Amino acid sequence: MSGAILSLCMISCDRDKPISEAEVLDKPISISTTIFTQARPTLEFEEGSAMNLYAKTYGGATAPDKVEDVKAVCQGGSWRIEPEVKISESEKLFIYAYAPYTEGLKTTDAIPVDISLQQDVLYSGAFVPVSYRTNHAKLTMKHALSLVSFNISSQGYSGNGELQRLSIVGDNVYTKGVMSIDKGKIIGKGKEVFETAVAKVISPNGWENDLPRIWQIPFSTKTTEAYLNATIDGKTYKTAFPEVEMKSGYQYILRMILTDYGLEFISNQTQTISLSVESDKAELLEGHGVIHFTHSATSFMLPELTGDNVFGSVRWGDGTSGTYQFGVSHSYEQEGNKVVSIETWNSEGFRLKNLVGIETVDISQY
Image 1 (cartoon, rainbow, N blue to C red):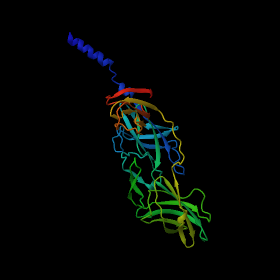
Image 2: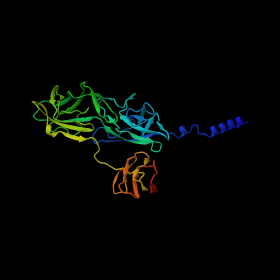
Image 3: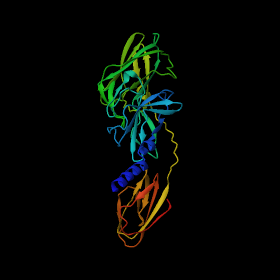
Image 4: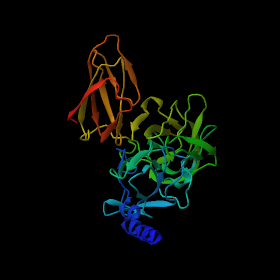
């Protein structure tokens, strides 16, 4: 009889247990993007644009993926993630992205870069964490390459001034390399000469817009020379770059003068323009609160504040203050009651490891 009762209990318990609850409760993550730019590279993602998306199981570019071969496609002003990446209540994922989309790109610390494609290479940088409650990742995409632009004017030049081809060469000029998605740093691996075709006529006043330009792996001419090869009216001129140290995310406008004697850079007229937006709009902060702990201990260890992207400050109650960091302890020279106040944002709760000496906890402002 007891065996029958046990069997019935097991059946009943199994029925009550939400077997598929984890699957039902799992949420698909979502993303949105902002691009730092004010020049003529990618201003915004257009309909149909695609990115490689990585949902890492812990915070690191080489961490395992929750789902492999994920593609994010811009559709109707938002991103469709395929296949879906779902997150459970107990999980946290760390999101990275890379554009343009490359089929079968599994690596995140050695992404191949090839300037012969002349594509604006974008990367997300440091991971953006998502959780079950905050399952939306706001990605800020950055430019990995430098944009090198040329403005050429003529002075007493007797030819037609038809600019036909451009290429950049030098000992530290690379046309291929590998990039890490978190840092955006490109390590040069190949120097095959890339030549771009141009169809512009050089005039005494130069050009006001639509400058010929080349996406380039950043390089410096402070220690090693680099050269521009420019073919004009069928003749190729090789001209040494002025001193310049190129950085990713910047556009360099180099001015040149063409005469019957040759083609030269005007070194004091080089312009460096950030591709990053210089204006800034602060977002509203969420989850603001203050917790007060009254205690009589000789030292106090800060509690663990739970939540995503938690930050804050602490007043120790003895006239000193600091930045909130979980696990930090503070010692007191005088005895008696002290009030520790922690101001925090994005906190959903807290855990105290030690209650010794704590007399009251005030969460009326939390």
